[in-house]
Image (cartoon, rainbow, N blue to C red; front, side, top):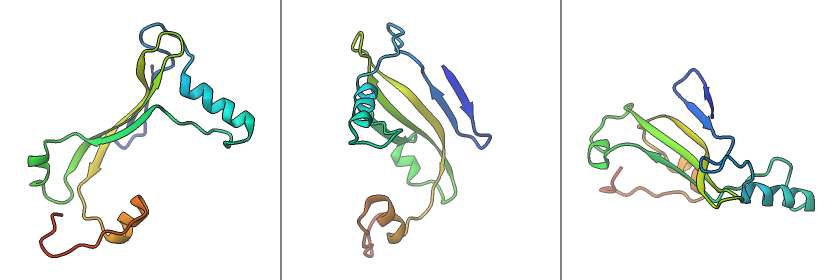
Length: 123
């Protein structure tokens, strides 16, 4: 495992091999390399089996937290070992996110669709 800190509270964990059999062969990573060779993806292209990011907080308590509160976060990508079939995360990032208001323009950048806020909508 390789552990990297950015000095601002974010830590990236990279696992070089399968935790079950230690193989370095991954299904999606190898398919992405093939796509690059075929010219249907740019160099460095990498798609995992799944990708996710979460706030790590009880939703009932998080909504009561004031703006500016830092909340732990976790981001991960999962892969499948090509030798034993184990599903694991070769990359995990832990950090914190500040609770803030999101404007329609910011949301449009993130989702591609602006959100129209109406009186009474939850924030």
